[in-house]
Length: 159
Image 1 (tube, helix red, strand yellow):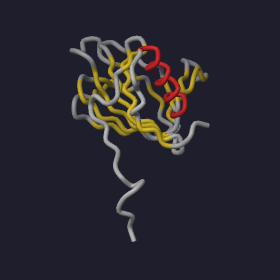
Image 2: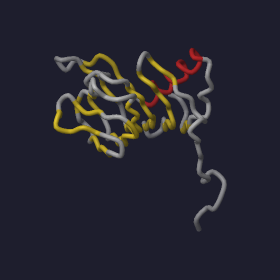
Image 3: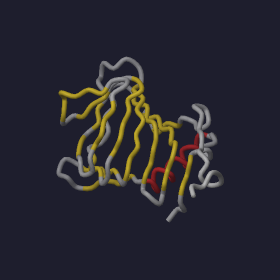
Image 4: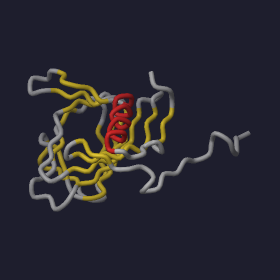
């Protein structure tokens, strides 16, 4: 028999249920964190000319571009535009860049399994972002900006 109610009910977040917070020029809207699976789902807003540090993915990433355009420094032949879907396999390494001549902000939805391991030009680790650390950063940014980020879906217990 299939359960019909209880903990199986869907959770809904409207556009205004979670705030946008900014870390410098980077806009973050954390939608869902599953600490048990190491999954984090968020939207990012990037200004024209924005560059994310080169990073290595320990798990797969799924991305849907909602506005603007962006690509990878390592693959200049590909440019993601509104409606573009991107799959990044585990163990990929790249540097996200937004074109200097981009008109307005770039808005991208990401589902990330595992960690982003930031690396320098020599491949040395300079930082790690995962489900646990993004949740901590989110809570800190929300508190610092005086906004309520408590409606973000959080599954699992902090470790």
